[in-house]
Image (cartoon, rainbow over all chains, first blue to last red; front, side, top):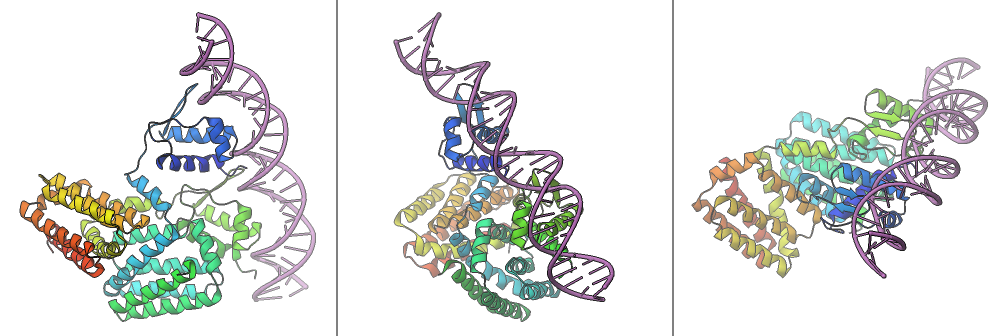
Length: 223
Length: 223
DNA sequence: GATATATGGATCATAATTGGTTCAGAAAGG
DNA sequence: CCTTTCTGAACCAATTATGATCCATATATC
């Protein structure tokens, strides 16, 4: 299956290495074992090892074995990789923590143009025909609330969360949880948030975002 | 509806690509899967892909797959780069937004062992002889508050902020702003926060963290 | 030291997957 | 109607994965 199994396995191997399964500087299991472990052909596993070797994670020694060299746990990329593995519950909790505060900040910092952009995203979401289209516009809506805050870092942190929400696992969850009724509820809640922003009402915006996200959590996680 | 389904799909695809669902340099799912995903025929999907290819968003490779090309603007790496360039003011604002809430959450979720670790970091910080040592323990202190929340994602997001604070520009700011008096103030504020955590008092912890961070902002930014 | 075993290195034919192309027919809109 | 667009299917071409086999080197055992 030319589905880039090699790259996929390389990523999984790297993650297992960094999880400390074979602490550096340690030896990996023989290729024949690893291949069986991953359920792939040895040839394919060897390609994955080749990729990791190029990246400097492995040292391969003929007749001796494959050895882990360095591992990065505290660097930016290490953090990002761990962020990618976050659970939906954790993500939802962080959203509940950050987004209401951002909405409050947006209420005071937003320009008229900002609010127009939010309204446009809101309208598009309400008119969206199917679930993927709605989700696309929903994401834009939330992003534009953060845009209002004029805080680059905050925007990018939300971008990070947005990326997580768009990963396949999340997408499946959202697809299962989607219905026309729920979309209508979301639209009403978005409208309430937008109204608070238009009133320049920080507390109202905070509460609107909070109750909206609680609805989302209820629909996605059931609590 | 013979009205440009392809263009519509192209726009949605582009939006999902920009949202990082298949981060560059990443591979898109096979055309047959994507077509089913969007609920359209493979031919139509291919027209959409053609449009995106013309715009330079995709690289299509026979037998291999379709790849997202440039557009690191919204991928993990692009976000990372922009995060690294954040201004001290933005960072301070984000800290003020996140850390008090995290402290409140920590007050309810912390185990005795967690609190012991925080106390240990607090003591070490107070006894630190020079500025780098104090900053180290200060960072550990704050990090351990986040550890209490049992939220991996939240911890890693704080780790990200912590990395920012350790970049050269920040370090210089902190070094200039450091003094024994201010260190003593920080220690008192840390002690107040720790006390609130030990009381399992969420509101107290939130307020203690908030006023501490306001002190830090005053010392670093002057407002 | 000689031999056996374990392990990485390399090659090849075959099968599976994937993008590329074409075509006939259905569906939507003027 | 007529045109455009979408659909569904079949087939081609390129790439990748598989499974097997054999070679090369290092380590253990006697």
